[in-house]
Structures are given as structure tokens and as C-alpha cells.
Length: 246
Image (cartoon, rainbow, N blue to C red; front, top):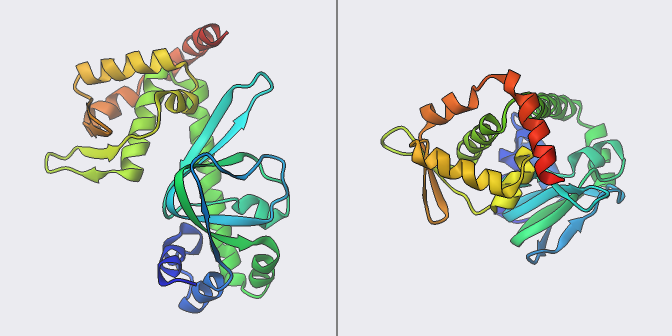
């Protein structure tokens, strides 16, 4: 167990508030692994053999429809954990996990982690609270896709991205790397890549964002106004997206 791995584990929301002894016990189970760009960590439907703590790089979680379209659920970066659902209930993976660039992770096996939890009820309660919070986040994400027009969905994605990965600038805006492709963003928001491209250009013209290479600068107030567009327009927009994709 490396000191850096223990530090990452201690900062995970799953273990926020856990005692140093609990953190040491979890870290002792972790095995460091590395993956190359494009390498699959696990596939949807595979047995949930353990959970993965991202140390370096990014991991894309996605599912592929019967007609071959990829729906990106999220990208996990350093400090994120994936595969925790399967490791807790013993079920199968709910998505494909693919390395985006070189990736380093800490892997914790399902069987030893379950044994550890059985002896630490306080940790069980912490994890339960985190999973409930994630369920709320998923509900919010589904609401954005189902009820809001594309412009609001894209604004909400950018707000989430810069809050999660960015930093605050002196003028109150936030900046973040935006290395994810427009095709991947389109999958996140449920739209076509050309439409996302046009909307990003429109956001830039209106001063809501400014793109400088791989960095996006965001005017939080302007993006928030765009994200609060009337939900009533969502149904019509969603129908037009289906026509685009057809």
C-alpha cells in the first residue's frame, strides 16, 4: 500500500468521517494496477469482482445500445471510485469501463471488502448515505435529460464539469480542462455531435463560455441562466433529437 493510495482512500466520499483505523483497513486491501489508453477494465454484465479507485487518468463508463450507439454515463477521474455497486451487492457490472489515456487505480476485491464491512457497522452507514446521495444525483440527471431542452442540458453539463474539475478565477468564473470530445459530450446530454458543436459556439458568442485550446472558461451566472430554461420545452427538443439521430 502506497501513502498516496491511502490518502486518496481517506478523501473518498464513501469513507468521509471514517476513523483512521477504518481507512487503514480499507487501504490494506487495495492493489495498485495500471491500464493503457483504450484498455477495458471491465465490461457490462461481467461479475462484480471488486471496486476501482482512480489514482491517475480517466475512466469512461458507458453502455452500448443494440444498434451500436454508445451512451456515456460519466467519466471518473482521480479521487473517484467505480464498481462499488457490484462489489456491495455481488451483482454484475452495469456498464463498460474503459481507460481514457494511461490510468492507475487501486483495486479492492469484493470478498475481502464484504468481510471487512461485516465487522464495521459505522462504515456501513457511511456508505449507505453516500449511495443515497448518488441516487438523488441520478434522479437529477434523468430529470435534466427528460424534461429540459438541449440548451439547458448542455449548460448543466458544463456547470457540473467546471465545478467538479475546475478552479475559480479572480473574476468569479471557473476554468477547467475540457479534453472530452464533443461526441462524448453529446452522449452525456442525449444529442447529436453537430448540434452540441453549434450550441457551444452559441454559448461562446453569448459570453457564457470561452474556449482556449483544451481549457474552457465559464461565466457561472450566464451558464446558470441557460441551465434554468423552461422544462416545458424539453419534450419537443427531445423529439427533434430522435429525428436527428435517425
